[in-house]
Length: 117
Image (cartoon, rainbow, N blue to C red):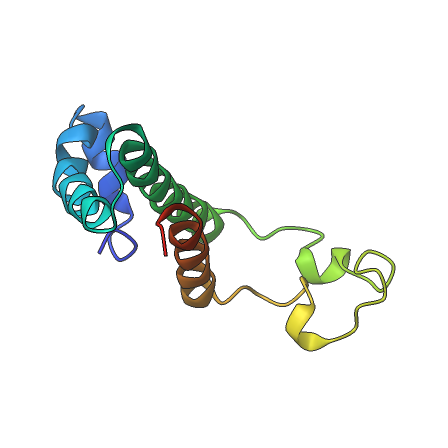
């Protein structure tokens, strides 16, 4: 939901209500951490890591949306030498990122590394 309303971060932050806004999300994450067997410092660290990742992701997305057109842009900067001769389209950093896929992969990787199997 936050990714759909990134302007809320600035609005809430300006009013000093960021922690209050994040409380329901933190409580839900604590519930999930406890269900996965995490307690104490490990649970708090996992909750904060997910929160920081999500908020950071939203801020980077927002910055990219609002930034002026870059000269040179990513496609111009990633040549064969920069990409270390990786010419495969799937691995080419020159392609625009699929933000939804990148977000899901990032959250999955983080949660997978913090939550016990």
